[in-house]
Amino acid sequence: MVLTRPAELVESAAAPAPDMTHSLFERRTLSNFILTVLLWALALLAAIPLFSVLFMLISRGGARINLETLTQLPPAGFMMGGGIGNAIAGTLVMVFIAALISVPFGVLAGVFLGIVAPESRIAAAARFVGQVLTGFPSILAGVFVFGFLVLAMGTYSAIAGGVALAVGMFPTVLLTSEQAVRMVPQRMKDAAAGIGCTPFQATWKVTLPTALPGIMTGVMLAIAGAAGNSAPLLFTALFSNYWLESLREPTASLAILIYNFSGMPFPNQIELAWAASLVLVLIVLVFNIISRMFGSPKL
Amino acid sequence: MSTAVEAAANKVAPLAAPEYAIQANIEKIYYGEFLAVRDSAVNVEKGKITGFIGPSGCGKSTVLRSLNRMNDLIPIFRLKGKVDFLGQDIYAKSIDPVAVRRHIGMVFQQPNPFSMSIFDNVAFGLRLNRYKGNMAERVEQSLRRAGLWDEVKDKLKQSGLALSGGQQQRLCIARAIATEPTVLLMDEPASALDPIATRVIEELMLELKKRYTVAIVTHNMQQAARVADTTAFFAVDISKGGRTGFLVEVGPTKQIFEHPREQLTRDYLGGQFS
Image (cartoon, rainbow over all chains, first blue to last red; front, side):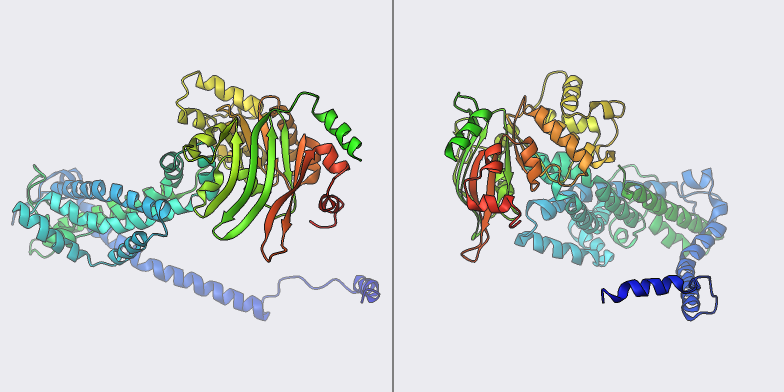
């Protein structure tokens, strides 16, 4: 073998240069081309629903996006004009309440699952419950909060709506936080211990700041999901045609406004429902884009 | 033979009795039921560099990490024996491992700066200890001692992770010495670096020993020969079906490399096994 090798080399050196030019109709060139076209087509197909919804919202609701729509109260029956200002405010307030509840609990529970006792039984149970909650029908969150908050307070309220949305946000925040703190490299945790951090300091000063982009991504996705969630609000915040004056009264939200107005026989209200849909999609989009910005690695 | 050894020893350590920062007498180290290290007594002399060498799996890193209780992070770790640091047994019940690590700093194999600015990396330990003095001055001093100041003085606000591997390792050294630890433990600090960055780190170690006591683990024998004053050679015992590391011999580097007392050392240095 060793002996024949030099001979082979001499032979190949003498042979003509191999043909390495493009050949369009060779089998693998063709299959490569066909598969590439197929994948592009499928990708475009997948994008069609998103873009057609966006297109429809912009073409039907875009015309009504103006200062009046964004700042005025909804009109009554046959009235013209009016806006969705109270619903925008209500949605933002309730999402804020929901974030206020779900983010601290979710992140702390995520730290417990990811760092403090990842192998413990309670962690395994909590992880399982978190995963089940992810697929939990959101209307049941509304029913649950109706049962223990709305009945107790005697009224529908922004607080109840916020709590119901928080139930939906919690598992997302929990599971992404756990992932994010786990992704912090062990060598950074070692470095923290090596310089004399207590376990709490290592988590608070090194692991959490390092995991922050990942945690924020989860939080923003959860907020985007909550903003578009309507079912939990049906039994908890209900709706209101007036500005939010107290957190303890029925509160308007974009999602419920869309539901209410789209079924009305008045063209003005239907137009507003389209405008509200567009605003809602834009809010969701903004939070998604913010989450992308947090998620991109920074040095 | 023995006179040669003594002569070599005398050249390194003059007549005064050596002063030790750490006197470790490790009888056994277990991970769960697994006996990882046995019978290893090493001393780390003040103001000198002590090198730990040996084949992989010989427990040299485990021994080093037990000198500042880093191994306590592994729940199943258990140590039988005594590690005296300036006259106190750091494995005594009353000792807080976190406090131990504030006096015995550590530099790891993989450079591991925190994902924060260069300045904040160095200031980290100082803030942890509620340092009241001039922070900027102390950070500059630490970066100078780590031989990094000139390269980073104009970009202290940049992330430590944006530096090259060798610079990151020197940043970690600056971070470790900022709090003026008594002893600096280095666990293969140059093994992830290219030859040029390695030489910079080695020169730095010789500079560092003027102020600090250094113990270094290295798989690179030439590195130990170049920087260590004292060398401890570890080997693996696979006789009872396990893989237990143990100390074969320890002595002045020159003696270990030129006149090893043990056959195992001679075989290892001669390339008989690795």
